[in-house]
Each structure stands twice: as C-alpha cells, then as structure tokens.
Image (tube, rainbow, N blue to C red; front, side, top):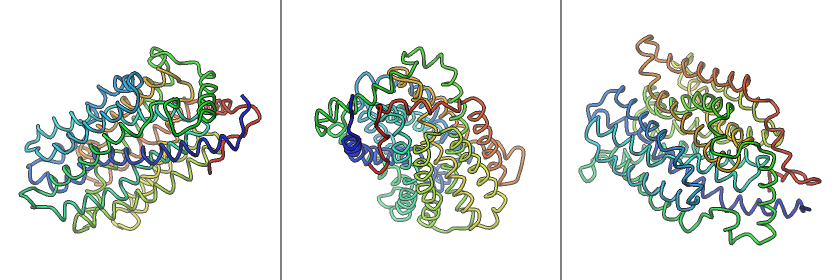
Length: 443
C-alpha cells in the first residue's frame, strides 16, 4: 500500500486527539479511586480503630480480587467490544468506591476493597489492548506515556483535592472527611462511565470521525505489524516464556508503585506537615516531576526504537532515588527530591514496559497475554503496601522499607536485562510501510 506520510501523520493526529485525552481522564479517575484510600488512612484508621497492618492488608487485597477477574475481563472486552465493557467497568467501580463511605469495620474494609478489585479488573490492560488496535508498536510508547501519565497527574491534582475534601467537609452532614472523600471521588467515575458508551469506538471501522482512506491506512499499518508476530492464539499467551518473565518484571514494578502510592501521604505527614491539604500539595511534587520526566524518556524511547535499556536504566535510577530518600530522611527537602526520582523510576517505566508484550503477541493472545501480565504483576500491589509492615519485624529503621523496595526494583531491572531480547523492539519497526518514515511524534 502506497502511503503518503503527510496523510498518515494527519490520521494519527486525529486518533490522538480523539482517544488519548479521554482515556487519560478515565485513568485519572480509575487510579484516584484505587489509591485514595492512602489519604483516607490518615483519618479512618482512628475512626475505625484499625492498625497499620490492617490497612496494608485491605489496601493490598484489592489486587487479589483484581487478579481473579483480570484475564477473563480482557477476553470479554475483545468479545463484547471496548465501548460497552469499559463503560461497565467504570460504572461498577464508581458505585463500589462511593459505597466505601459505609465501611464500619476491618472486615467490611477488606470485603469492599476485594470487590472493588473485581469491579476494576480489566480496565488498565483493556486500554493497553485497545491502543494496540489503533497504533502500531513504533508509535505506541509515547501514547502509552500520555495515558500512563494519568497516574502522575492524579497525584498532582488528586492528592491536593483529596486533602481539600477531607479538610473542608469533615463533619458535614454527620460524615467524616474520609467518608466524603470516597463519595465525592466515586461519583465522577459513574458519570464518565455512561459517557464512554456514546464516545468510544470499539474499532477503527466504527470510527465515523475518520474518512474511508484514513481507516484503510490505519488498518493497514496495524495488520502489517501483526503479520510479523508469531503468537496469536489464547494458548500462545499461556505457553509463552516471555509472558511469564514479563509477569515477574511487572510484579517488581508494582511493588514499587503501590509501596510509594499508599504510603507517600503517611511519609509526608511524618515530616511534621500540618493539614490534609498541605500534605496533598507536597505529595503532588514527586508526581509533577514524574509527568515531565516520563514524557521525555518515552519520546526518546520511541525515537530510538529501544525499550529494554531505557527500562533498566530508569528503574535503577528510581531505586537509587528511594535509597537516597531514606538516607536523607532527616532532611525533608532532599528526601522529597529523591522520592521524586524514585517515583519517576517507577511510574516513568510503565510506558517503557507495556510495548514489550504487544511486540510479539497479537489478537486473542495479546488480549490474554496483557491480561496475564497485568493480573499476575499486579499481585505486587498486595506486597507493596505490606513491605513496611513486614520489614518492621526485622528492622526499626523507618527507611528500611524504602531500601527493600529499591532492592526489588533492581531485581526487576536484572530480569529485564537478562531475559528480554535486546532486539525485541527492533522488530516493531518492520511494520512501517516501505519508503515511509515513522510518523513524527509531533503529529
């Protein structure tokens, strides 16, 4: 197929503006509803007479429910289409997140977090799979970075908003601040879930905002790339050794992500910061640094077509940042600087990681394989919040948990270097039509 680079760039620009901002909004709401319990912890533990250990168990049990329904959810997304399935996920998780306001005991907390995990299962890997239907791998890392940056942006805007809600509404209507937090932050997910039904297209062919030539071009690019992939059946995903290695790597990354996300407000408050809004504003700093850093790193990765060493170097830098934040824990300004580097090393590595599975999987194998990696890897989300609790049994150093998480991240970097082929992503670029340069990232 003879493709005009200018028309190709214009077509992908239309896709970018149509999909990425909307999916970005959806993920901000998803991540906020998942981790706002870290802010609620500052007040609800005292109200419910819960221990730090009980909180860590409840925060992590989300990922057990997530694990059980992850792969089935992603396969069902392929069966029923992204529009209806993503809408179903968002509406149900929004309802359950709002109902968290009625938690009155430790066991109720566990139950609701488990059910929330069931409801949200399939959202993130579903979106990752959904993007493979629109973009060839050579263009995907920067788009993934834009999508995944919602994690960082939710920290930049979500943490101050969470703090403001708890400061402002605490005691209003007979409800505690943490109850208002769950209610107010759950409702937008329900509203946007209904919006998904009328907005998203499940495939390129359904997109009425593209003309026939643009649809043919986009379909050609995706299908040309898929012909170079060797694993496309459901069974291929389960039999692939690379899939299980990626599960282990992602497991280490999720320990870092949720070890930081659930405990960062507590760490900041321990510096002596007063007021929930002030805590929220300071916790926004590491996420703000991450937004800028991850975009620069991902754009460079897309331009060079290299993923593995970008991932290894960034994760190791993040591990070093966490270690130094512990070493300088008595100097808040330096500690926050190094926590920012640690956060960039974790969150900023996600858009470098996710092009890996789709580099060799396609079709049903891609849907299942991405689901397997995300579900098994996200069990690290159970481990991450519990690391500080477990480490206390062996060390009274408050920074010991940061050192442990850093060591786990380095292990993941080693697995990536040792077991992921160096040329895996060089194969991505064969999908570019002959004589056509890759679409400029400015498109």
